[in-house]
Length: 391
Ligand code: FAD
Ligand code: SF4
Ligand code: SF4
Image (tube, rainbow, N blue to C red; front, side, top):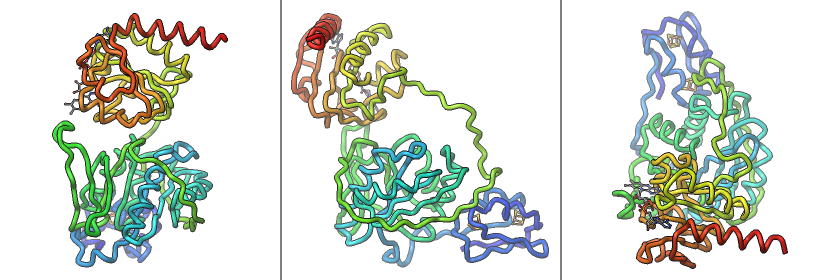
């Protein structure tokens, strides 16, 4: 419930901020209409703290929350692959609950992606288009998502554990007084509840988490954890009116700097990854891996140690605190194969390990193992590939 107290001085800042046009100021007092979706944007801007929203984290009637929702992230106008992976999983969960799958698209010119979401199992797609929703900002996206959740009451809400999802999901959860399970590696339905599985204690145990008292049950999942599978239907498109004001968005994006090597693919999109660890020995050593990756049309990845030593940017880190990948081919060079690295690449179709220690644990998951110094093995591979390409 939202209330405006006697402290209101009629300054109208809240009315200018409300993305849903729900506030008018009359006789120096703010009046909130039924259009309010409890997004909370006005609470933050009121200079005299006159607006309060009372949220009940524990709902008396949890059964009024229905359907499995997915935040369908776009990069510009293009849907990210992870949106389809989450929609596929949402379909499976919704079928188990006999509920619908609803996807949420935010941005500019993103509506055309609704068809694709339908192809992967979405029954309904909510589309909020506004020039201030591109590029992404927390201040722009969070009130729109909070508003939609407050209005439609989903049972489950899934976000991708991408840079955007990791920023947005906690803001939404905190605004609604809800919990959030980050980086889930498994999702299923148990006794009507969302069973959220994720690594805990440094990846040494898997924890099962349930949220029995609050709705929606919220989780984030990294790209490449779930497979995308078509399950076609014609999605109903619901257009959501938003009226964001410039002063609501406090972040100014001046420049977007791409850190990946020009021409080189990102690891979460590559079919082939050549990855290096501490055994590579130096920044220069990675040049050899780059050459191999380039010949194969792939990307260069790394263990956390190689990233921490400054040999390669963080965006290349594979593993528990990096990126999860599932390429067709993963070549691990000078990587020992600790559990924190393995959780990020074990689902690769074919794994080749190059390590000079025959006892290295990476060989336990490798399809092909080469015991030797990468400085000798990788140049031989490059030479052989070049020869084969000339034929
Ligand atoms: P090492 O374990 O030191 O292995 C180096 C290997 O290189 C050895 O097997 C050695 O035999 C081999 N080698 C040496 N020289 C050569 C050579 N010339 N040719 C061939 N082989 C050679 N790690 C990640 O990778 N990703 C993560 O996301 C991640 N997240 C973490 C999160 C937490 C909470 C914690 C606690 C740790 C995390 N780690 C992560 C770190 C992880 O525990 C290991 O420290 C790390 O993966 C080891 O990296 P490495 O295999 O490159 O190095
Ligand atoms: Fe009243 Fe606060 Fe709104 Fe100003 S911002 S009109 S003080 S409720
Ligand atoms: Fe305030 Fe949001 Fe309701 Fe508008 S929709 S009145 S900004 S809580």
